[in-house]
Image (cartoon, rainbow, N blue to C red; front, side, top):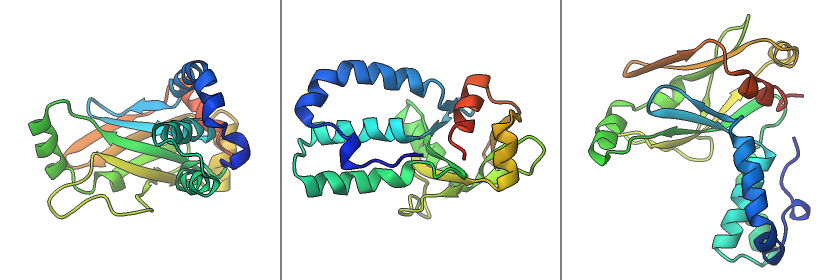
Length: 194
């Protein structure tokens, strides 16, 4: 999958003109990359398009024009783009009520290590979480984690050939399981693999 470079990031003036249409395109694309796991957990599978949008928005908000600063931003987003042998996702624990969220994050320490995906016919693949920095303490976990699911060659081939894909969480305080992802998500994820 293509990584972000200076060549595929548009200047801010040009982005201002195309932003509304680009946002519409990205939101439609994200419908095939969002996987709720129960009421309070969601996997947002990332790819070049989702990361390009995030980078463009940050550059716009922070009004970044300098080439070295743009390169620095892109360097931060590129690790979240799949490498052809994995899926990468932003994992979010979402609670509207602040007190409920605080209590849940205290009980869900380690949940990021208990998220899995499964290609039919193979064992589950557990996430490699937060490779950039630790996002939990002894008292609580974070509401946002960055996950990588590394697949072997046989899993990749099976997924590309239409095998069902499942996902879930097996933390003692939060258990969810989806045996077969919706076809639109399954097909989108299969395209990440090479």
